[in-house]
Length: 142
Image (cartoon, rainbow, N blue to C red):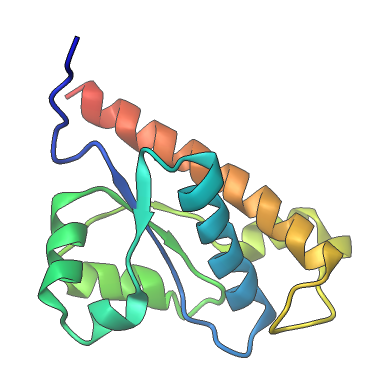
């Protein structure tokens, strides 16, 4: 049976840029785990800098699909820029929330995450994957 894919059958996952910050690196790594391994059929990512620069394709994606913002700090750059681009943030998964529950997993390295940082990213990715599933289930229920 062929299923016709609806426009909202993908969730866009957007991490903050957080260059030079451990939680930014954790957020980006978690995003890649979700879109490449955990939920490759139902998620994709858009580069935050493209969204900030007003790229039409990036804007169209966040306007047409449910989104998840992964912010590494209280400035909530991912969330704010999704909203400024006309998108609706369906879920927020702040890196710090996961870190608070697993404080022993702070990476000592920033640019290349060590084993603790990789594990923190994995825990974050699992939470993001669950949020993506919930958003898609909400879409199906409408």
